[in-house]
Image (cartoon, rainbow, N blue to C red; front, side, top):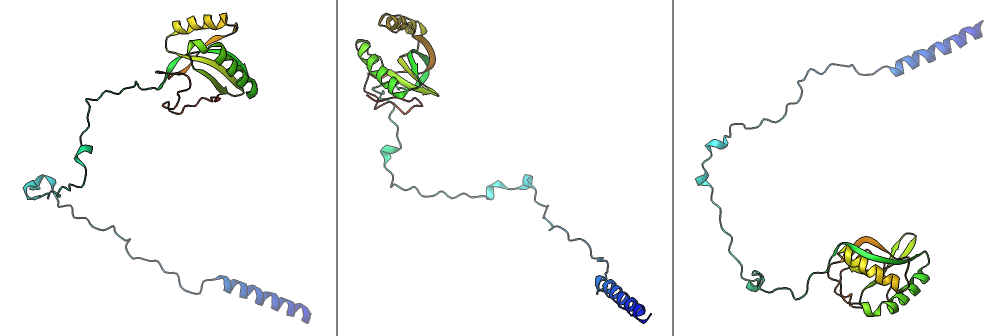
Amino acid sequence: MLLKSFQFGIVSVFIITLVLSCSSSRKTTRDDTPEKTSPQYDESFDPLRLNEDEIVFTEEPKTTARNDRTDRIDISQEPTEKEDKLVDGFRIQLFATKDIESATIAKKEAQFVFADDSLNIYVEFDSPYYKLRVGDFIDRDKAEQFREIARGKGYSSSWIVKTKVWSNPSPRGESSRRPENKEFQIQN
């Protein structure tokens, strides 16, 4: 029985110690201090009563380090060449393949066949095909006329494609003044 009372004593001491350790050691008090207030702003300013004559702006001295010729734009000179930009138009598609080597060979053949027509020949990549296209036609009637010429030269399955074309196409081989475009072109 002594053992049971000893065990009971140890358990009760443990529980009392646990309860006391969980309790707070300092008193909890309610903080009755008022909440912090936001800073006070001076709202006495009235913009209607502002006397604008009192405001003085000082002019900064001009520097003459710049070249006066850069300030003037001479609009009397007309550009010698028309601007070459991409616009909506038409091309004649001659051939389409998944193989780049076939597209390159077909382009060389088309350059030989259309050598007298002085039209640009393009290989454009439109996944997964490489498309061989000829010309920069803004007018559909001219594109239809050239499609008939292409069919007469052996491209019987050629058709007209609506795409972006150059507004002022340069002669074949003079693409240095042309800006970069999104077309994939195979060089000669």
